[in-house]
Length: 360
DNA sequence: TCTGGGGTCCTAGGACCC
DNA sequence: TCTGGGGTCCTAGGACCC
Image (tube, rainbow, N blue to C red):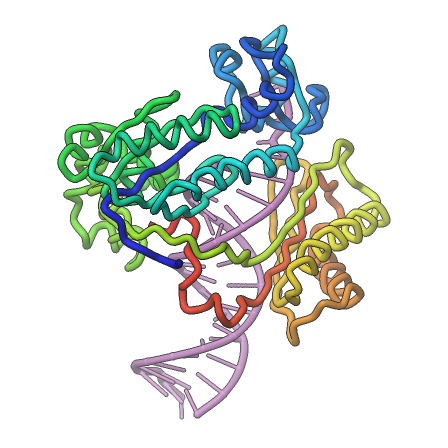
């Protein structure tokens, strides 16, 4: 298998995936505003993972503090995040897509994938896939059709919910030209603001922007890349090479801020053990560590270091993390701690053969 | 209403070497 | 006494996405 070019790129995106999985196993919740987040306790520090369409009507969306969401939707059903259940549901969806004759599937996350197909009528294929996913999993999805990964990805948004939309070089500018640059995948609010400072507000303006201006603002790599995004151009290669993780991290927001050194050390030991369990499961050592600390007024600092030689020894890793922790401001209470471990890429996955997530 | 958790990639600037 | 130019490695931070 590996990277391949097809006539069409389809982007399959499950509708309100997490909420839909919950409704599937709790049918009595159908039609009710369902919010999934944290441990399902709206009095805790946590945020919304997914809200059902019924809950979105009240202005609730992902990333919103759970407390606020609960207040906005008085009779909401609030459920805890159940990652294993979503992983299992996701696996069934991807299996279904792979079973489609001739399809190459590049998984992007729990609830979305690119599918490369050589079809004369991609809309028919899209409907086939929707039907197959619904039959096999009970879940609805939207499908974007494109002549590049980016166009397929952006097209999906116009198909939601349960629809199909095609975006190619032929209609890209007429559909996207007048929209804000931040409508593009990969252009967030910060980059949007920096573009606006140069008078670049829309997708069409970004597509026609002066390359020197973009390079001056964003560097030799990102500058040209943003203009390419504006044009909807980029790779059309779908790559089903299995994903190789660059690292693993665990972080925890504490319900009570940590003030005592012993509390911090105990928390770090816990995080290190969790991270090492994930790393060990891949049979790869640790070559880098990052400690993330969020202090009580909302500021976050990170401390990192390379580890050499590469190690799988718990005590060695722990010693490094504690050393990094010694650099933090011990006089300030801690709201969050995170530990990230980087792993070396295996030989056979180097040279960019493994697809970069979102690297179009 | 205070702001999760798991990821990836890029850039700037300093250290260090030849 | 002044101080090039190229290269790599490392750390910190920024940005984005689901």
